[in-house]
Image 1 (cartoon, helix red, strand yellow):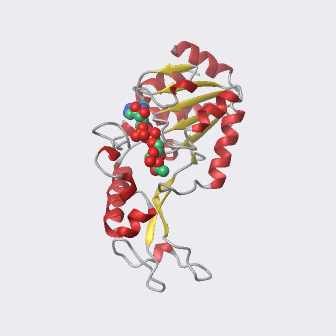
Image 2 (cartoon, helix red, strand yellow; image 1 turned 180 degrees about the vertical axis):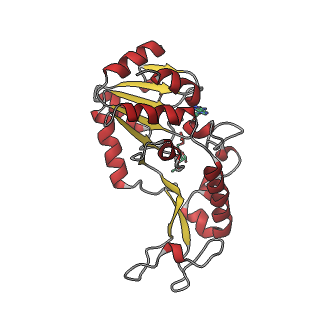
Image 3 (cartoon, rainbow, N blue to C red; image 1 turned 90 degrees about the vertical axis):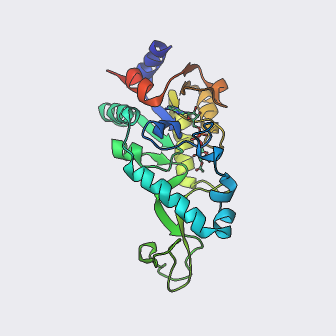
Length: 244
Ligand code: OAD
């Protein structure tokens, strides 16, 4: 199966990669839905990863993200991130990486133009639009849990997409374009449980692309795949991309 996937890769002018939390699992960053180890198996996402949850308990949610942020800063790109970045370097303009992840491991591995569908855990933004012109600088917020604006009392929140929130339109549009224009879509480390990201594999397939999934376990979008490579990102990607 991997040889067939390597052939498709060789022939594809454009390759779109969609990654999920499994891509960063071997860098030590917890996934969401993996039984036992996933974040959502221990926390209630609606309570922590939503605006209502944040408004109900800003300090709890802020501290939870601060812990996750520290984990991201301590993490290093794994062999899977590095294999994708090396391929992108060998083939300028041929690879587009779209990620659901809020870490910066693709960027730190070398894929600077990674399309981020769910935002950036290392970014902060105001909870409500700042009424000032120019807007107050989030960087000058009064320290606290969460930090707040001394001038207007606004709270800082993590710059990630929360449940029930819209995805950044430009990122979603760029991801949809990349999905329908590629000849091969590589889907790595996602359960396919969260839309619209999960819909990108089907969109690529309907537009005529081969779809290859890399995941040690079945996902909700396996049905969209022409090939499923049962294994981990850090093991399969270096093998899949070696020498191409
Ligand atoms: P999930 O936690 O839902 O799924 C992780 C996937 O990675 C599962 O299918 C695992 O089988 C797979 N996996 C685990 N270890 C792996 C490894 N070493 N290599 C490859 N795959 C591995 O995470 P996502 O699908 O990314 O949304 O979740 C999608 C979204 O749901 C997240 O972006 C987040 C969450 O709510 C927001 O933050 C808005």
